[in-house]
Image 1: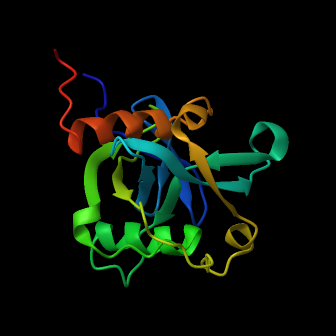
Image 2: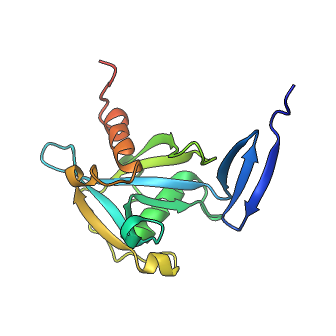
Image 3: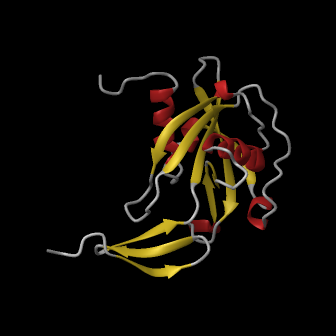
Length: 180
């Protein structure tokens, strides 16, 4: 019988390990990362715009990447909702502490090579004026730009989280049953 659950660390740094587990190579991040889908509703009360961040990323075509708010849980965060709230404020300036504006959307993963399921939230920021984003002090976040983009345009971006979480917003916030 083959050796089950055999794991070798092929490479490691302070952010992640590259592992070989039972013949599968993958990446295991060291920190829990949350994703936030902040949206603005229109007259229909449905999401019409999404708040995104644009950041430099030499790994992406054109050297930039537009995505949803993401961030690592930190020791002072009592729970993952607190992490999501902190990251939203740091990256976009939206300070949303009202729990009624937040909905947990479950966990997502983007690749079979990534050994992590990321908790995801959406938040309705309609009518809230953002402050200036403070960032976390890193150069990456200091260079980040906040974009308010129509959903129609955002769905054409290559980021896999945007359409995935958009569908979950309709499932969990608006109660749309996709089985019908």
